[in-house]
Image (cartoon, rainbow, N blue to C red; front, side, top):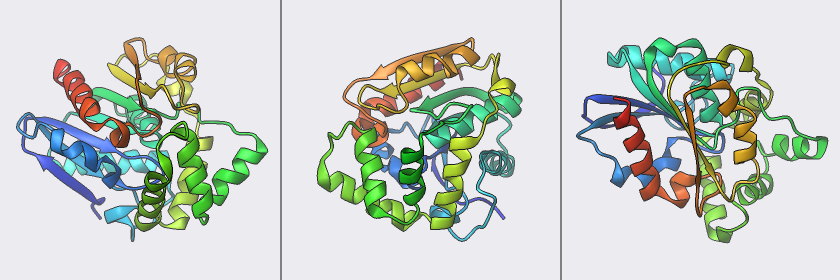
Length: 253
């Protein structure tokens, strides 16, 4: 079965986009009007249990996300492509860099979970694990990771979208995957070009965390702190984000 996806554009540079934990590829919709569809072809993937792949069962692992992405690239006839990933998807693009480096031209990691996971204390674990079934927990996480700046209506809309585009089983499984997966030893020293983007209002995936993880593993990494953004730059600063991503990929075409 082909993983669910949406294609935008018809350009020569091929791009696979991997979304985060809280919802499917539609989180990127604010970016769509600013994509250069003559220069790029974008494949926005929905993971198993999410969006257009909602009815597809799986093991809900980082490896499975990447295997599905590479299989889609094969079906599309894409020998090499750029990989962009947000949060959990940011961990997945590091997996692609570790195990499929020959397929990649460049990597963009948006507020990424590092390749060694994200350890949590017991109270935080309880909150995140409860989010599979609790709208309140999802809202709390969304608000915290955006610096409590975006207000009740944004939070409400994101929670509604999250429940509409995910199954509890997948949401629960993917949390354990991005929290507990560790492949840092295998990605350490990867020479692919990677741009790491973190929000100045994201207390979780901070610049300090990136300097102590991703920036150590990738010798050709660049990092930029995004002003006026938290964990969801595609929602918070879509025009700037679209331009930044596309400029970086064009430089590594």
